[in-house]
Image 1: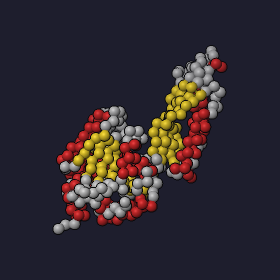
Image 2: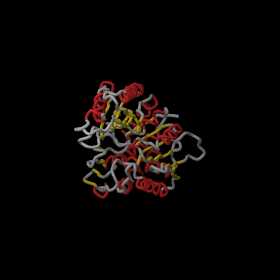
Image 3: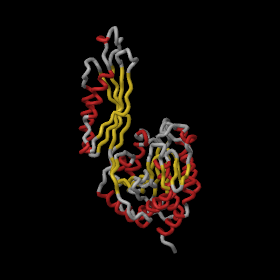
Image 4: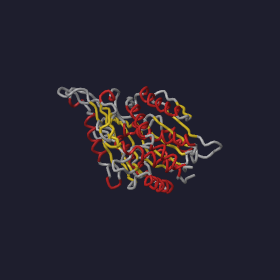
Length: 387
C-alpha cells in the first residue's frame, strides 16, 4: 500500500490542470479590497471547491468588507490544535480590471489581476486541504482561512487572523513565493497613516498677510518625517500621497499627507511613532494645527526558534518536492503572517507558487511551480513537529 506521502504527492501531481482551472476562475473575478460583492464572489468559488471535495466550509460575515471564509479538514476523535493554512483573496486592482486583462497563459507563465498575489496561493491551500480530506491522512486537524482585506491592512480580518492564529499549532501563509524561488521567513512591520493640517484661507494678492498656509506646513512636516528614515535599522518613512489647497490664488486652508512607515525591530515602532506624533503636534508655520490618524497596520514577521524548526522541515520537504535550492528571505513588504507570529504561533510565509511584478499590470505566475509548491506544503504539514 502506498505511504501517506506517496498518496498525497501523486494526487497533487495529477491535479495541475484542475488547479489552473480554479485559478482562472478566481482571477477572472474583480476583487479589489473595497469591492465586497467581488471579494465575496471569489469566496463563493472557493466554497464550491470545498463542497465538491466534501470539506466543511462556512462564512464569518462582515457588513463592509468581504466575509471571512473558513474550511476544516477534521481529524475524527482529535482535540489537537489545527495547522492553519492562510491567505487573502482581495487585490489592489479596481473594478473592471479583469475586463482589460483577464487570466491568460503565455508559455509557462500566467497573467491577470491577483494571479500571484495571492490567488494562486489560495488555490494550493485549497487543493492541499482536499488531498488530506480525500485520503483521511491529516496528521492533525487542518484549518483553511481565506480573508478579504489584506491589501488595505486587514481592518476586518486582523481579529479573525489573531484568533485563529492563537488556536493553531502552526501557520503556513501562502503569499507568493519570491521571484528567486525562496520563501519568506521575515517581514517588516508597517503603519499606514494620514495627517490633516488646518490653516487659514486668504486672497494671495489682496490679503496675503491674513493667510496661514496649510501647504507650507505640510512641506515642513514632510521633510521632518522623511528625516526619520534610518536605513541601517530598516526604518523607512515615505509620504506617498499629498493633497490640499483651494485655488492657486488662495493661501491653503487645508492639506493632508499619507505616510508609509516600515520597521524591523518591534521596539522601533514606539520610538518612531513618538517622533511622528511630535512632528504632527509641533507647528513650524504659526497658526496651523494638525491631526494624525492611523489607517492600518501590519506587525513584523519575526522568526522564532519554533518557526526556524518549521523552516528546516519545509526546506527538506521542498527538496523532496523537486525544489532543491530553496532558502528563506527577508521581505520589506508586510503581510498577515505578522499577526500570527505576534501571537507566538510559529509561522512561515511566501509558500505560494512563484510570481513577480505584483501590484502591477505585469504581474506573473510560474505555472510550473504550482505542483512543486503544493507538494512541498503537503509534505511539510505531514512533518510538522510543533505542538
